[in-house]
Length: 173
Image (tube, rainbow, N blue to C red):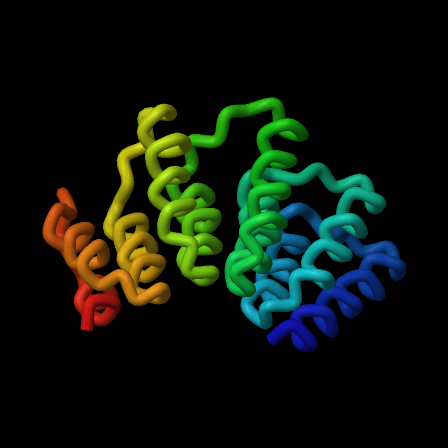
Protein backbone atom coordinates (compact mmCIF):
# COMPACT_ATOMS: atom_id res chain seq x y z
CA UNK A 1 0.00 0.00 0.00
CA UNK A 2 2.80 2.47 0.81
CA UNK A 3 4.53 1.77 -2.50
CA UNK A 4 1.29 2.44 -4.34
CA UNK A 5 0.71 5.66 -2.39
CA UNK A 6 4.19 6.93 -3.23
CA UNK A 7 3.81 5.96 -6.89
CA UNK A 8 0.59 7.93 -7.26
CA UNK A 9 2.00 10.83 -5.26
CA UNK A 10 4.84 10.99 -7.80
CA UNK A 11 2.35 10.88 -10.66
CA UNK A 12 0.50 13.78 -9.04
CA UNK A 13 3.75 15.77 -8.84
CA UNK A 14 4.51 15.00 -12.51
CA UNK A 15 1.03 16.15 -13.41
CA UNK A 16 1.58 19.38 -11.46
CA UNK A 17 4.83 20.05 -13.34
CA UNK A 18 2.83 20.08 -16.56
CA UNK A 19 0.94 23.15 -15.28
CA UNK A 20 -2.11 21.33 -14.01
CA UNK A 21 -3.62 22.32 -10.68
CA UNK A 22 -2.89 19.10 -8.80
CA UNK A 23 -0.71 20.21 -5.92
CA UNK A 24 -0.44 17.80 -3.00
CA UNK A 25 -2.35 19.10 0.00
CA UNK A 26 -2.51 18.01 3.63
CA UNK A 27 -4.99 15.24 2.73
CA UNK A 28 -2.60 13.90 0.08
CA UNK A 29 0.27 13.81 2.56
CA UNK A 30 -1.86 12.25 5.29
CA UNK A 31 -2.81 9.43 2.88
CA UNK A 32 0.86 8.70 2.13
CA UNK A 33 1.88 8.98 5.81
CA UNK A 34 -1.02 6.74 6.82
CA UNK A 35 0.10 4.12 4.31
CA UNK A 36 3.54 4.03 5.93
CA UNK A 37 1.90 3.88 9.35
CA UNK A 38 -0.11 0.85 8.34
CA UNK A 39 3.17 -0.77 7.33
CA UNK A 40 4.65 0.13 10.75
CA UNK A 41 7.26 2.22 8.94
CA UNK A 42 7.50 5.13 11.34
CA UNK A 43 10.78 6.44 9.89
CA UNK A 44 9.18 6.94 6.47
CA UNK A 45 6.08 8.45 8.07
CA UNK A 46 8.27 11.04 9.81
CA UNK A 47 10.26 11.63 6.64
CA UNK A 48 7.10 12.33 4.65
CA UNK A 49 5.83 14.63 7.41
CA UNK A 50 9.05 16.65 7.06
CA UNK A 51 8.70 16.63 3.27
CA UNK A 52 5.19 18.03 3.68
CA UNK A 53 6.52 20.88 5.83
CA UNK A 54 9.35 21.52 3.34
CA UNK A 55 6.74 21.77 0.58
CA UNK A 56 4.94 24.47 2.57
CA UNK A 57 1.91 22.38 3.47
CA UNK A 58 0.64 23.03 7.00
CA UNK A 59 -0.20 19.98 9.12
CA UNK A 60 -3.53 19.31 10.77
CA UNK A 61 -4.61 16.98 13.58
CA UNK A 62 -5.22 14.14 11.13
CA UNK A 63 -1.71 14.13 9.68
CA UNK A 64 -0.17 14.26 13.16
CA UNK A 65 -2.40 11.34 14.14
CA UNK A 66 -1.08 9.36 11.15
CA UNK A 67 2.50 9.80 12.42
CA UNK A 68 1.44 8.91 15.97
CA UNK A 69 -0.27 5.80 14.57
CA UNK A 70 2.94 4.69 12.86
CA UNK A 71 4.69 4.71 16.24
CA UNK A 72 1.71 3.20 18.08
CA UNK A 73 1.72 0.16 15.78
CA UNK A 74 5.30 -0.49 16.89
CA UNK A 75 4.46 0.08 20.56
CA UNK A 76 6.86 3.03 20.61
CA UNK A 77 5.21 4.99 23.40
CA UNK A 78 8.01 7.55 23.64
CA UNK A 79 7.79 8.59 19.99
CA UNK A 80 3.99 8.50 20.01
CA UNK A 81 4.01 10.87 22.99
CA UNK A 82 6.67 13.04 21.35
CA UNK A 83 4.44 13.49 18.29
CA UNK A 84 1.35 14.01 20.44
CA UNK A 85 3.14 16.77 22.38
CA UNK A 86 4.44 18.22 19.14
CA UNK A 87 0.88 18.28 17.78
CA UNK A 88 -0.25 20.33 20.75
CA UNK A 89 2.73 22.71 20.67
CA UNK A 90 2.87 23.20 16.88
CA UNK A 91 -0.87 23.66 16.54
CA UNK A 92 -1.19 25.57 19.81
CA UNK A 93 -4.13 23.47 20.95
CA UNK A 94 -5.15 21.12 23.71
CA UNK A 95 -6.05 18.00 21.76
CA UNK A 96 -9.49 16.67 22.56
CA UNK A 97 -9.78 14.46 19.49
CA UNK A 98 -10.75 10.98 20.74
CA UNK A 99 -9.19 9.29 17.70
CA UNK A 100 -5.81 10.91 18.36
CA UNK A 101 -5.98 10.17 22.08
CA UNK A 102 -6.93 6.54 21.37
CA UNK A 103 -4.00 6.26 18.97
CA UNK A 104 -1.58 7.26 21.74
CA UNK A 105 -3.39 4.90 24.12
CA UNK A 106 -2.88 2.10 21.56
CA UNK A 107 0.88 2.62 21.76
CA UNK A 108 0.71 1.76 25.46
CA UNK A 109 -1.41 -1.30 24.68
CA UNK A 110 0.98 -2.61 22.01
CA UNK A 111 3.86 -2.22 24.47
CA UNK A 112 1.89 -3.93 27.26
CA UNK A 113 2.33 -0.87 29.44
CA UNK A 114 -0.93 -1.17 31.38
CA UNK A 115 -0.08 1.31 34.13
CA UNK A 116 0.92 3.95 31.57
CA UNK A 117 -2.30 3.31 29.65
CA UNK A 118 -4.38 3.79 32.79
CA UNK A 119 -2.50 6.99 33.64
CA UNK A 120 -2.84 8.33 30.10
CA UNK A 121 -6.57 7.66 30.14
CA UNK A 122 -6.92 9.46 33.46
CA UNK A 123 -4.61 12.39 32.66
CA UNK A 124 -5.45 13.04 29.04
CA UNK A 125 -9.03 11.93 28.57
CA UNK A 126 -10.75 12.77 31.81
CA UNK A 127 -8.95 16.04 32.61
CA UNK A 128 -9.76 17.28 29.10
CA UNK A 129 -13.40 16.27 29.29
CA UNK A 130 -13.03 13.65 26.55
CA UNK A 131 -15.29 10.67 27.00
CA UNK A 132 -13.42 7.39 26.45
CA UNK A 133 -15.15 5.09 23.97
CA UNK A 134 -15.10 1.34 23.36
CA UNK A 135 -11.76 1.61 21.55
CA UNK A 136 -10.26 3.35 24.61
CA UNK A 137 -11.34 0.56 26.93
CA UNK A 138 -10.28 -2.12 24.45
CA UNK A 139 -6.76 -0.65 24.51
CA UNK A 140 -6.73 -0.84 28.31
CA UNK A 141 -7.91 -4.45 28.21
CA UNK A 142 -5.23 -5.29 25.63
CA UNK A 143 -2.51 -3.58 27.70
CA UNK A 144 -3.40 -5.62 30.79
CA UNK A 145 -3.79 -8.87 28.82
CA UNK A 146 -0.38 -8.47 27.11
CA UNK A 147 1.39 -8.53 30.47
CA UNK A 148 -0.73 -11.42 31.74
CA UNK A 149 -2.70 -9.34 34.20
CA UNK A 150 -6.01 -11.00 33.39
CA UNK A 151 -7.78 -9.95 36.59
CA UNK A 152 -7.19 -6.28 35.70
CA UNK A 153 -8.24 -6.89 32.09
CA UNK A 154 -11.48 -8.49 33.34
CA UNK A 155 -11.96 -5.59 35.77
CA UNK A 156 -11.73 -3.06 32.91
CA UNK A 157 -14.07 -5.22 30.83
CA UNK A 158 -16.62 -5.46 33.65
CA UNK A 159 -16.60 -1.73 34.40
CA UNK A 160 -16.79 -0.51 30.79
CA UNK A 161 -19.46 2.20 30.74
CA UNK A 162 -20.02 1.71 27.02
CA UNK A 163 -21.26 -1.12 24.86
CA UNK A 164 -18.69 -3.85 24.35
CA UNK A 165 -17.79 -4.99 20.86
CA UNK A 166 -16.16 -8.06 19.34
CA UNK A 167 -12.68 -6.67 20.05
CA UNK A 168 -13.59 -6.29 23.73
CA UNK A 169 -14.45 -9.98 23.94
CA UNK A 170 -11.49 -11.06 21.81
CA UNK A 171 -9.08 -9.19 24.08
CA UNK A 172 -10.45 -11.06 27.11
CA UNK A 173 -10.54 -14.44 25.40
